Amino acid sequence: MSTGLGCIHDARSRDTGGFYCRDCKEYFRKDSPVYRSGELLGSLWMVLHNINVDLRRAGKHEDPSVSAIQDKIGIGVRHNNYEELIAEAEAIMGGFGKDADSATLVLG
Image (tube, rainbow, N blue to C red; front, side, top):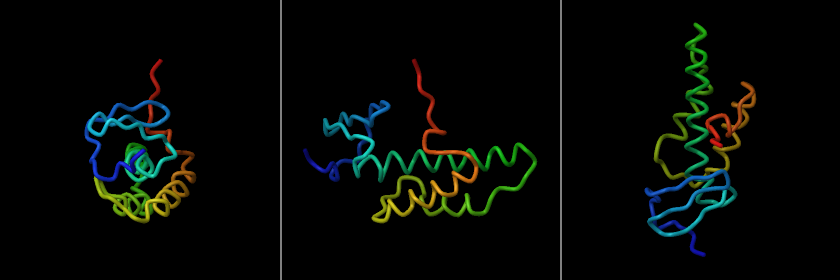
């Protein structure tokens, strides 16, 4: 199995256990570095975004710690310290009763 680092994984088929890249023809499980450094960080960013949306809808101000970690994660950015970012995001989300699955809608 390769590390999948040479591919940008644009053609993804997602399921509850990870994703399959049709470009490099590999499956990346949820616990793989490729999944955690890309797909998971993207999901965490979306949960953080939704937290601030919920706050605005409730007539409150955005939470600065939520916005700050969103900015650190960015969109489409590759990070060497992705595990640190995941831990920081999960700690903040936990304070709002959210986790990585809060951005996922399971069909079926």
